Image 1 (cartoon, one colour):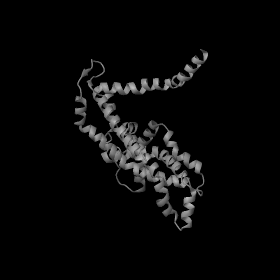
Image 2: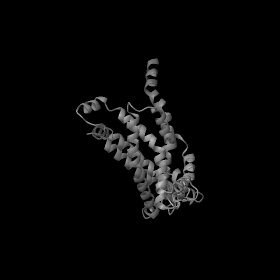
Image 3: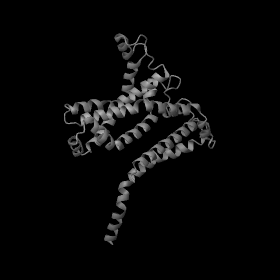
Image 4: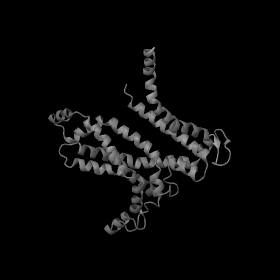
Length: 293
């Protein structure tokens, strides 16, 4: 009888131990997703009763110029900083992974510090830097005589996108560099020594050995950067409020505006659901690309 009770405890104990995770996941992750999908089928401003409208919010969203503009802005910002970030990240990772580099710990910390500094604090610093009238960058460039008139960093659509991309590049360069460094450290040193014996230069080894063997890590960084770019909120909100002319409006910033400024929670939920589907599609592409057959 005692043995039967002990066997029952052994059978159910693992489920008991992992149950807190599933309970918390259901409360804080699964339930909000299901409730958001339900809200996307309604018209609700937070005070009146919910009015079921079916797929009308999705139909309106697909006709919404600002929704497509937010996706276009994300694509432009992505193209402005991700190729440069991956290139610089790979260069810095190669340098910090080499034997001749001194002060590796200092440079790794210096490049990674922006990643854990508060994004709000960094945003306000960039506001001071890119201010059109008395910003430090315009003042510096005019004192050097490189420009005659202040550049509209935050007042012109393309310069505003460039400013947001610059800030994202500054914040995430060190993080991607560390990811690429882990890929570099997995490459056997014997490959480089064999290449040097065969007469290969360091540049040739970089293109023929380093880049092909870190290709998957480069792809991983690209997918993470894609999701991160479409999820941008704090940077464009503090720097430009989504302007000028909605040139830095992102899907998440549009969701915020619909929710907490227009109080159109049903329409905002449809944005959240479409954003979730978009990110899930990107994740499936990532899994497909990493699938080795």
